[in-house]
Image (cartoon, rainbow, N blue to C red; front, side):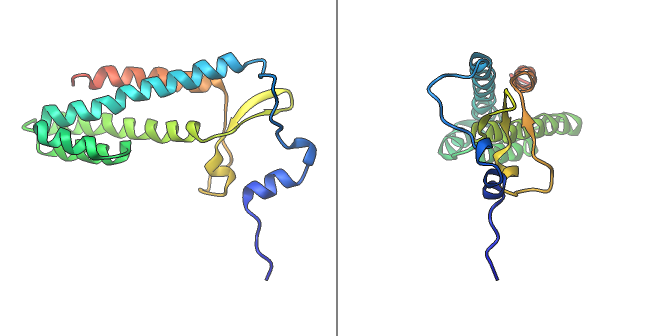
Length: 167
């Protein structure tokens, strides 16, 4: 039985003219992309920092130190949730905190998509494609991002960081 080609191979093999080329000249809207992606990464860094702050405030130095050894937002997110569960807060406040941190986790997932996605020139317009969906991971159709959308997400991240600092 012949081996099935990956979604990426299928995507790029049908039309060699469509293949993206590395060029020495920047895209016309490169500055817009740089600002959008830079803001997203910068503002996500605020949420990254807040995982340490919440661990320190709710669990003390030992939990903060444990958070420092955790690589990746997801692992620190789990520590924050366990600290919230043990916090001497009313249930309504704990529920609100968990909801805010779930939003932060969604933003971290989006940041990872942006960090690993290719920016291509398609029909004269530069777009970012969700690389995971190109590889056939997930059931949704391929997502296409533009810098305006990424900038909008980074604004939402900033608003969330302001709510979480200090809850």
